[in-house]
Image 1 (cartoon, rainbow, N blue to C red):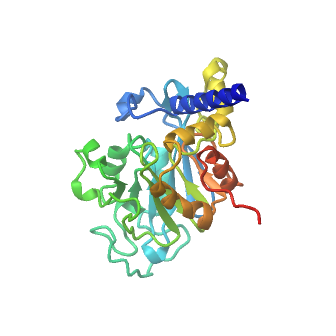
Image 2 (image 1 turned 45 degrees about the vertical axis):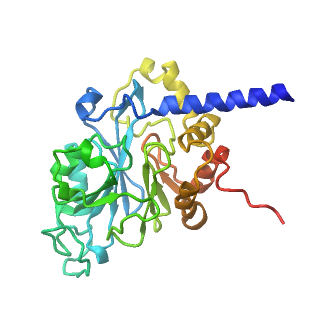
Image 3 (image 1 turned 120 degrees about the horizontal axis):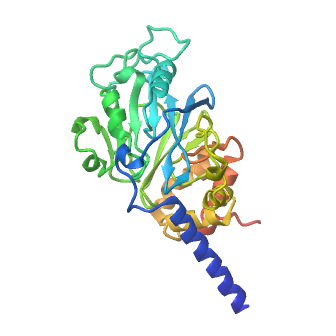
Length: 331
C-alpha cells in the first residue's frame, strides 16, 4: 500500500514538473519579437462562428512548434461595434486585412447598416458610435505576463485601441502612451467594467501562473484562454509552413503533441502546478462562474487546435487534480 502511494506521488510530481517545463515559467521567455527568431508571415484564418475570428500563427517555444492564436471578437453594435482582440500576435498583412474586413474599418460589421446610435459614453477618444477609433479594433486584451510580445506592434498599428491588462504590463512596454493602458487590473474580485457588452465576461485568474486573463463569450459559449489549456498538436498554425518530417517527428515534439491536451495526466499536472496545488479561495471565486454559470462548450486555446465541443467537460478534467470544482455528492 505504501509503495503504491509513493509511486502515485512520484507520478504526480513528474506530471507537474513535466507540464511546467513544457509550458515554461517566467524566466527565459521572450519579451520582444526579435527574441523569437525567424517566423513565417503566414496565418491561418478561421471563423469559429459569426462573432469570433481566429488567427493561428507559427510560434516557436523552446525549439518546439507550438503555434499561437489571436482572436477578434465582435462587439455588439449597441455597444459601438468594432472588435476586441485577445492575445496580440504578429500583425502580418494577412491579419491586418482580415481584421479590417471582420471588424470593419468604421467599426461596422459586414452586412450591418450605418446610422445606428450608441449610448456608450466610454468609447475611445476620437470615436463615434459608428466610427470607433483604431479601425474597428477597439480593445486589445493582453492575456498574461507571457503573451505580450506583440503588444507594441498591435498598439502602434491601432493607436486608438484601449489596452486591457494586468497591473505591471505598462513597465514592460514603456514606449506606449500611458493613456492607452485604459483598463488595468489590480483586484481579481473587482475587475474594471469594460464597455464591450454583456456577452463578454472577463475573469482574472491572478493566483494562477502568469496571472492569466480569461474571456468568456456567452453567446458563442466560448472560453478564451492563454496557457491554462493546451490542445496539441497545432496543424492549423503550421498549415502554410513546410516542416520537414524530422521536425514534425522529433521525439520531444511528438511527446508534446501526444500529452499537451486536457485529458492527459501531464496536463492535469500542469494545471495543478500552475494553480500552486490546491487553488486559493480567491482563485476559486473568480473561476467558479465559468464552471457553474457560463459553462463554455468551446475553448479557444493559444497553443493547439480550438476545442469545438465538450469544452466544459475537458476543462473540468484538466482541473481534476486540484480538487476544484468540487464534485457534487450524490444524495
